[in-house]
Image 1 (cartoon, one colour):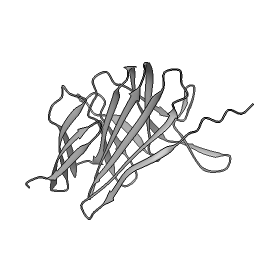
Image 2 (image 1 turned 180 degrees about the vertical axis):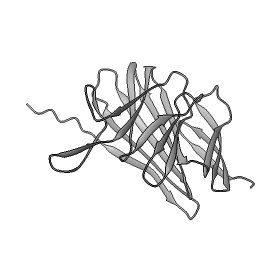
Image 3 (image 1 turned 90 degrees about the vertical axis):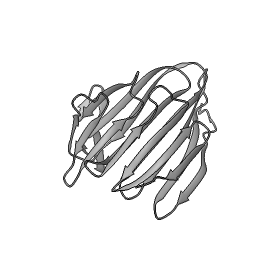
Image 4 (image 1 turned 135 degrees about the horizontal axis):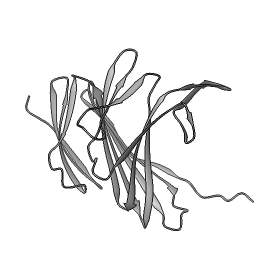
Length: 196
C-alpha cells in the first residue's frame, strides 16, 4: 500500500535586485521520521560572483546529515591547509568551495563510483558520465547547520567573523570589489552594503 506523506515545499522569501538575489525555502520531507527533521535553505547571490548557501536543519533527535554538491565534469581538489575547502577546476573557471562551519564536518569526494554510489550525471536516457560530487557530513543532535560559499578563485571572498557561534553568524562578503556585511541567524538575516 502506498503511504502518502504530505510532502510540502515552501518558498518563504524571494528577492532580486541589481546587486543581490536571495531565496529562502524549506521542506518537510523528513517529517515522517520518528524523530522528524525540517530543512530550511537560504541561497544568496552577491553579484556578480559569490554564492552563499545556508542550510539549517531542525526538529528532534540525533541524525546523520549529508549535503551533496554536484559539479559539471572537471576536477575537485582539496585546498592545502584549509580543511573542508576545495577548488573545482572546470573547463572555463576555477571555483572555490568553502565550508564556513567546518568544525565537526566530514568531507568526501565521489566521482563515478558505484560503492558508495555517487559522482554521476545523466544528460540523456541510459547515458551517464562521471562528475565530481562533494559531500559535507555531520552527525549529531539537531539543530545542525551547514554554511557553504562558492566563488571564482581570485574574484570573491567570504569571511566568517566569529568562528565559535552557529546560531548567529556574522560575515564579510566580497564579490568583484563590492562588499557586504551579513548577519545570519536561524530565523532571520540582515545584509548591508559595506564600505569599499
